Length: 287
Image 1 (spheres, helix red, strand yellow):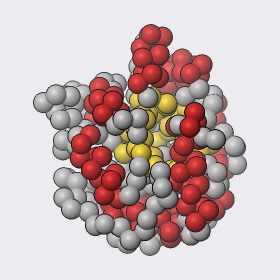
Image 2 (spheres, helix red, strand yellow):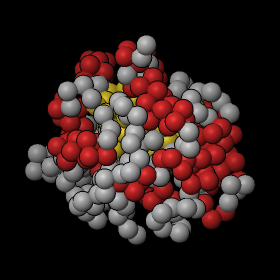
Image 3 (cartoon, helix red, strand yellow):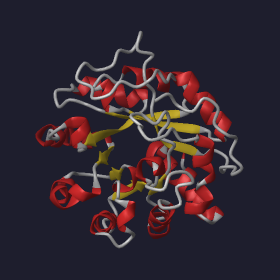
Image 4 (cartoon, one colour):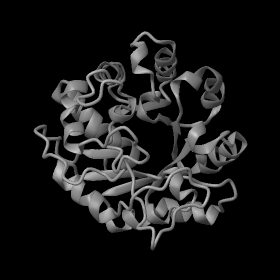
C-alpha cells in the first residue's frame, strides 16, 4: 500500500530536538534495488520524503531501520543518513561475513545497531547461528541489537534473546495480542524481559497491533504501561512508510497525536522522544 499522501499536522508539539526512532527508507528501486529474496515489495520511499515528513510532524532527527526488503544491502539507508546533515542514525542488517573494515565504515557512516528479525512470515526460520556471530562482531563497537518477534513465540525465544550480549531493543512492544488484554501471557513475557535493565522497547506501530482500528484505543493501555514502568528505556517511532500494511494506511499526524495518551506528562514525553533516543544514538551530544 502507498503511504498516506497528506498526513495531518499534529496538534501535539514534540519537545525541541525530538527523535523519530523507527522509520525506513525504500529505494528508489531504480537506484537501490530490492533484495531478490524479499517477501514483499514496498513503494519507493526516499530520504527526501522522509525528511519532509520529519519537519511536518515537528521532529528534528530520525533513526532509520533497515527492513527485510533490502536484505543486507544497506546502501539506501546509508545514502539517507549521508543526506541528513547529521540528523539521522541507522540500524543495519548484516551478514556474519562482514569485514572489520566494513564495520568501521558503517560506524563512521552513522550505524549504531543491528536488527535481528524473528517473524516467520518475513524470514522463515531465523538464522540464529548467524545472529550470534554478528552479535559477537559488533560488541566492540558498542552497538545495540534490535529484535523483532511475535509475543506468542517469546516463551521459546526468550532464552536465546537473553543470551545475546549488550543492549537489546524490542521492536513494536513485542507485538502483543491486544485482544488478550494487559494480563496476557505473551505481554507478561515481554514485560519480564524489561525487568532486565539491558532491555529497551519501542512503543510504536499501534496500526499493526490494533483490532479496533484508528484511533487505536485498544493499543494505548499497552504502550502506556510500558512507558510508565520503563521511562528511561522506551523509544517511539512512526514506522513510516509503514511497509507491508494490509488493513489500512495510518495517518502519521494521528500517530503523533497519540503520544500524550501513552506518555501523559511533559517529563515522560521528553524521555520518550528526546532523552532516551539521544542517549542511545547520539551519546556524544548528551551533556
